[in-house]
Image (tube, rainbow, N blue to C red; front, top):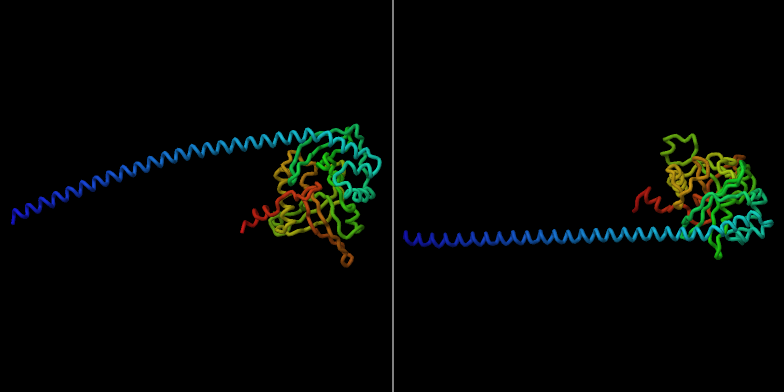
Length: 331
C-alpha cells in the first residue's frame, strides 16, 4: 500500500509540475501578447499623432492660403473701385438736377421719389468738391455683398466730415444715398412735434438713458433715447427724443443691447477697422416709430428695428437667432 501511495504521489507530483509549467507558459504568452498589444498601440498612436500633426499643419496652411487669397481679393476690388467711387460722389454733389443725381446712386428708380421728398425738408449738402479729400477707405462684407466704406473731409475749419458707402450695381460702384443722407421718411424734429405721418422710418442715433442705474441695466426693460444726426458734423446731434422702453429680451431689445455692447467693447460692425464717427455712447440704427395722441398726450413706440446701421441693405448687422441662442441656449 505504501508503495502504491508513493507511486500515486509521484504521478500527482508530476501532474502538478506539468500544470505549473503550463501556467507559467500561458502567463509568459499573455505577457508577450500584452506587450505586443502595447507596442502596437504605441506605434499606432505615434502614427496617428504624426497624421494628426500633419493634418493640423495642412489645415493651417489651407487656412493661411484662404486668408491670403481673401486679402488679395479685397485689395484688388478696393483698388479697382476707388475711381468709380470718386466719380459717383463727385457727380452726385455737382449734379444740378435730381434727374442727374439719380444716375450716381444705388437703386435710382426707387430712390428718386425718396430723394425728392427728403430734400423738400432738408438742405442739399453744400460741399466744395475741389476741397474734398478722401481720408480713409476699406472693403467690408455686408451679407453676401462687398461694399466700399470711405471717409471724407472738406478742407477748412468748418469743412464737412462724413462717411460714404458704395455698392456695386449695373457694373459700376454707386453711392448708397440712403446711408449718405441719413434718410428718414420725415424730419425727426417735426415728427416728435406731432407733424407728418403717424408712423415713419428714420436713421437715428441711440444711447442708453444716462440716469439708468445698475438695477435698471440688469432688469427686464431697456430704456434709451434717440437723436437725429447732423449731416457733415458727426460729433453733433439734433433733437433728442424722450425715453423709449423695450423688452430687453425681445427682438428689438436683444439687437439694441448687442449694438450698445459692441460699441462699449470698441468694436465695429462688418469687421470694419474704422473708429466710429458718432458721439461717445451712441450707436446707429434704422428704426420705424409709431406716434399716438391719446387724451392730449403724445406717445411714441418702436414698431420695428430693421437694422443697427444706416446702410441700405437687408442685413441687420447681427445674427438675431445666434444672439438668442447665446442668451437663451439652444433647445
